Length: 380
Image (tube, rainbow, N blue to C red; front, side, top):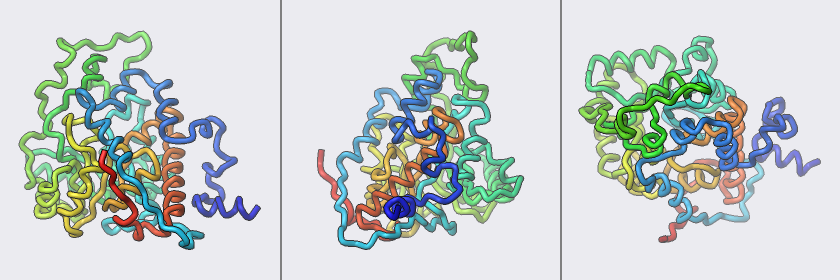
């Protein structure tokens, strides 16, 4: 009995939670990790939807590099440390968070199910997890629920629009703004082109059964020279700051010079990110890029990271290399595709549980104790 209570304390299970062991619906207990949630989602989802979320760019070199990077970083755990109590609590840009795991901004959720943005936001609220999203949060915030929300944008080149957008986010209850800075043009994604993917599906959802898949003139046409924000520069951050008092986070940085420029341009934090391997193929894996970006920032602002995170140990490695927090994108979507909102909640619970156990086994009682001495990089 004491051992069971000790395990519950370690994993942070709260009495009354629907995700308590023994109260989880049977179907949710089938997958035992994020990889297995992906397999369940793959079987349930339309091929167009699965390939859109799972796929990368062209030869998917960067997609694989994101995962491979974790295999070259090994943990050096400390022992004989009292880890009876382990806390994931994290302070970030004025917020006190229960965990350093955030939900990344991801497009195309409606490919999985209708109103998916709102469903993921509801899961974030239930899990007390900060979510980065452009849509789906309005009803929750209007009802006065304590949703932790950062809005996200790919930006625009108009100063007045930027200021108005920032003001609306602040007035709407946002706690920050994430600017995706690596999205100047639509990328060339072979899986989408092969499936004759139409980007209109991102709003309308996948074709219904018996409905013909739309056929563009050429399979690659949607990805060829389609501009998003090609003229956006660092000045955009200052425009946002003129419209609100919220922290501004620049997401999509892998070059240390850009990390330094982000600080100089007024960013309150950066996210080391290569767009999940979905923007420019051949880009360095984010875990490999992280240490140099952390060094370039010099402790002046927090550095976050996304890309390839599938395990609690992945998160521990990222934090040991300097990430103040991490963003997970595909993992919650595999939960969504597998079981809807309960699946998203289960995936978030699982990652938090894995991280907490990994910290305990590594001799780390608080996230603030995680440091560079915990890891060693081994050349491939």
